[in-house]
Length: 352
Image (cartoon, one colour):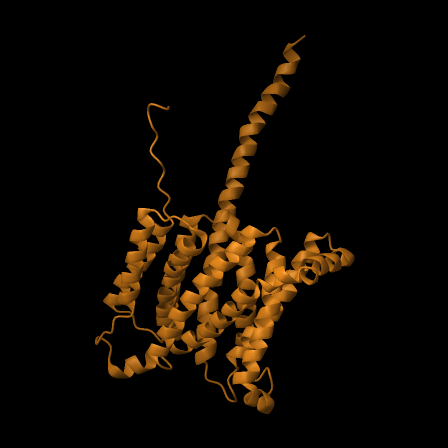
């Protein structure tokens, strides 16, 4: 009588490995989707921003300060929609959460004023950098944010770096120095075309952006670890302060031009693409980063640098790579992988 019960047991036992393999396959596919999204966001934002700052059109060029503000308000709207979704698409619940978490906790909200102001400065500096540097040089140089983030993590979060990470930081600095090394290989006329403005201003903008990115990122991480608020609520708080600081900058530096030609002067499809990518890019990364380990992030950075180099050379035609640049880029890519390398501790045979 017991023989008929065997087939169902066999079926259930065989279904467990099948489910496990399906789950593994889904995780692998999610990793590759995450890789694609990371590469697309990083590369497309830099290239479209560079293209928008060098595009020659009739009439006034759009003001980068207004684009930063537009991106902040778009980010706030996107985060509110995400909080609305998390609260089962209930307006009453959304209103209660926003009131309880933001208005009723003024001190918690005020903590975000510092990183928000720094992020606003950083976003404006990226426009300055890409107005004066080609996308490839910018991409490689901006990887110095790994160094600044590591140093601020050690000093502010008491994070311990292993020997591989310290070595990678030295390689990173050497790689960026090589990328910025002046060369006489290119003709003078070509050298003038490579940058629409001053190379020095572009490099200084990137360096300040790297320091601001490192400090603000670590400060924000510290706040997230100390409180239990959702990352979307925190981004709404960041966006509110970012919008205020951004508007102050707009009317201090570009008030006269806005009174003459309007807030959205010079805006076109490319400009709005930059605004959307800047606003939603960070949120997309936050959503997919849990599927991306350090090695995958290293791949994303490497592919983004390679794509930026190729597109800058073949499409934008504002960059001529040299052997020194390639050597520096290889150093930076290697440092990115080495920084994310997690050495496995050796197994003690006596404990096995």
